[in-house]
Amino acid sequence: MQATDQYIGVRGSRVIVFDDDGVRAPVVASWLHQLGYESAVLAHGVNAAIKVPTPPRTLPAHALPVLDANLLRALYAEAPDALRFDLRDSAEYARGHAEGATWSIRPRLPATLDRLGATHGHPVILIASEPPIANLAGLDLLAEGYRHVYRLAEGYRTWQAAGLPEAAEPTPLPPETRIDYLFFVHDRHEGNKDAARAYLAWETGLIAQCAPDEIGRFRITAPAALVPAHHKAA
Image (tube, rainbow, N blue to C red):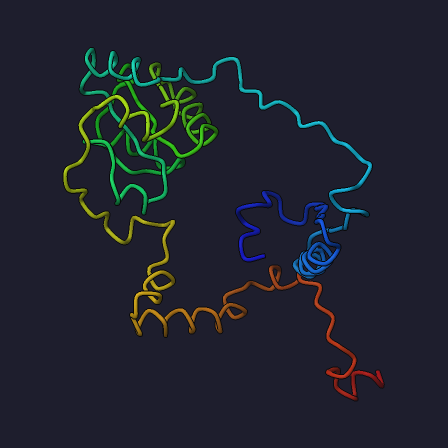
């Protein structure tokens, strides 16, 4: 429930939940309803008679060329100055990355390439944790006019398998650039009391941070025992 932004891509969408015990799905559906989603529970859960075939993941005809370890070594030998962009979580990047790789996110790639002075003919290698992430980012670059954009078959593991140079001592990213990482959320688990206080302040202040139209999406009905008497009379 705390990760609907990762698992549900469309606000207010229709969501069908199911389980194998008839307990968890109704609870989750109830919360989703209160959050503004049109939710339903699939009768009989995983044992339901309904069968929905999984559609194949299709990519556009101009999907990115994929480099395995051998192809990557060949490209690196031919163009050692090829630009490499790491699109993984910033925490993963901090633990280790390709030598010379720049951490970025999809919306920032064109501006970052401009800042680096890249030309449209410059080879660009995208390193991502999941192929669709690299494909979507790469398609953006192709639309911008870049002609030689590649993705690694297995992300950073492909770079390692190719035996190419890795950053000896990864340079910490400036905190302000790590928009995918809330420091006070993570640091509170490391005994940082200031981070714990910041987290509590953030939690208790969530409603105040919401705009009226955001709050209006919620469908929370207070139990009858908690409704003031004058509201009942009305």
